Length: 134
Length: 134
DNA sequence: CAGCATCCTGCAAGATACTG
DNA sequence: CAGTATCTTGCAGGATGCTG
Image 1: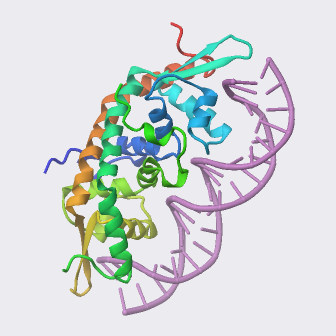
Image 2 (image 1 turned 180 degrees about the vertical axis):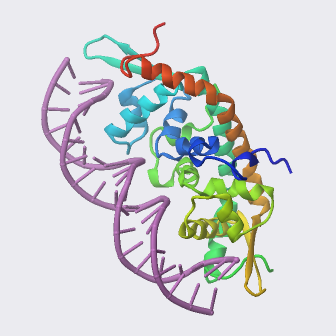
Image 3 (image 1 turned 90 degrees about the horizontal axis):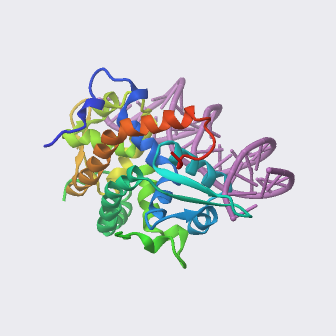
């Protein structure tokens, strides 16, 4: 059993400074990951991204892009055209996040059916009691 | 460029049924992943988990465990001792989630320094304007 | 076009008290 | 010990209108 993360759960640790939590808070928010994935294809402009994420609000797109830029995951380039256009694309650092992300997405796709099955089985079985017996 | 996820962002797709969103909603909540990681070591009882996640509320621990059980990611075994004790541990399906998760955690640890640097650089540079120039 | 400023809302999550 | 049942709340995120 490769227990590689244990450092966070045992003993003396500051919740605020737990690296695992940091990560999760990033993955937690609704849009960050979707934008990173959207930019996997290549550079995109503001409104292109808006169209790619049909239900994102103006506010959230701006804010999430800013955060990603701030963390060094993407570049932002303003072209002084008229009207102005702005392009976003992944930095090498940003690209490097795609790999673990892809692994996760793949896992989810592969196991999706199993989860669905387990879920409806659980629900049918009275949605109470254990599940370990037979 | 291995564009493996594109299916979700282009053209005709139902936001509600986007598989990527499904996944993210699972990873999104505050505790699910932490619990899965905590159970990587092996079986744990309710209050053991509570101690492992110092700041989780009673309510959230119960609820998250139920959801994970429902999705077939963990087993729940009640021992009719007095007072009762209950053990939780990962199913094979649950274990299989550890791999992509570990990849992500590792990535985060490896890049943590870079992100911190980028962040403070961004903040110092007026926290406005672009970052692509020099 | 690409945003910012504001106001507003719902729901994830916390706190607390009680039970088999 | 391992939960359930309520009540409450903060803040992520939505809606809308304005501007260089």
